Length: 69
Image 1: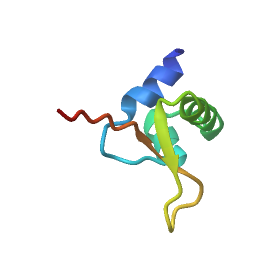
Image 2 (image 1 turned 60 degrees about the horizontal axis):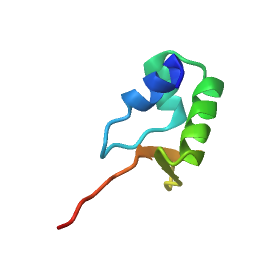
Image 3 (image 1 turned 180 degrees about the horizontal axis):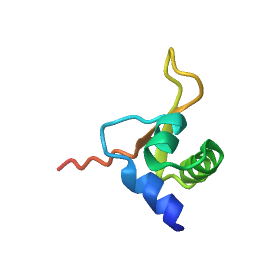
Image 4 (image 1 turned 90 degrees about the vertical axis):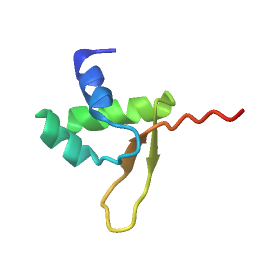
């Protein structure tokens, strides 16, 4: 994982959703770089991606892992 990938994924906190625009602004990276990282992380199963009404593009969140006994 590159430094930029670690920065983007590491910035995402469980239970919160993020847009690529918000992440690129917070991390001072170009949207193109952030979009590429998010797309790759989604395909790799690291994060979830979904559409949200009123939001242009996709919304991303970290995977939620639950355990039941």
